[in-house]
Length: 279
Image 1 (cartoon, rainbow, N blue to C red):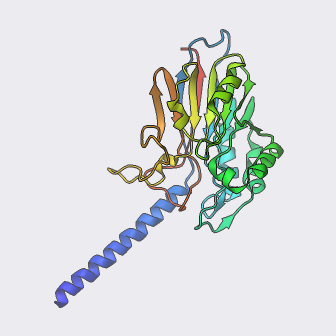
Image 2: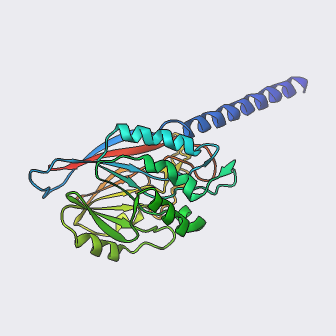
Image 3: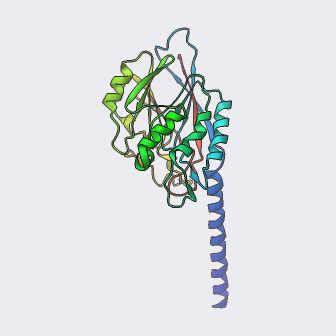
């Protein structure tokens, strides 16, 4: 019995140590510099004599302690500026309200570092579910002060492309028909920025690209198991990365911050540098 007891004690200690190491690794992953993923999307009918554009997609900043203080976001802004994008597109969720947060920041504090973004043409954003849950008017004011154009079921012309911005689908504020009407009234190839990827399932053959976040690529996605949750009505179909369906392209970023717990496993922070141009 004593021998069995010693074996069980050693097993328990080994499991406890493994759990501590796993938690440490998951936190280290959560606070690591975002991976920059790349894609090229060919656009039929691209305006002649027009150079390709470089789009930088980021999402789910979730500014809050301990994993995403404003200082960390400022460093990421520097990383983005070094990539020299033409347009920066931010797919919502600027703040966090997770119970395990060591510090909650206001929208002003969360958005302020983003005022340092220096794209050639514009920075455009939509709101996410956490922005609506916390204080959407405060988010609007903070984005305006930072010089970021907010789209809420509307569209704007940016250089040769028409950019539509869909309000948050997860909180039932998205109006896809209104957004499509707005973007179709503008010139050039058409793309849509959305917090949730789910609206991509609606047919819109003249929108060649949708950019989204929200899913965190699962945030906790153990090897061989995959994401434990995607927060999408379509499960893993639109949960992460590059998706091509029916001649259209969807790109879903894992985001920068965290939700629920300040940990990431199997879903590193990332952002996407997407070049769009002629075939």
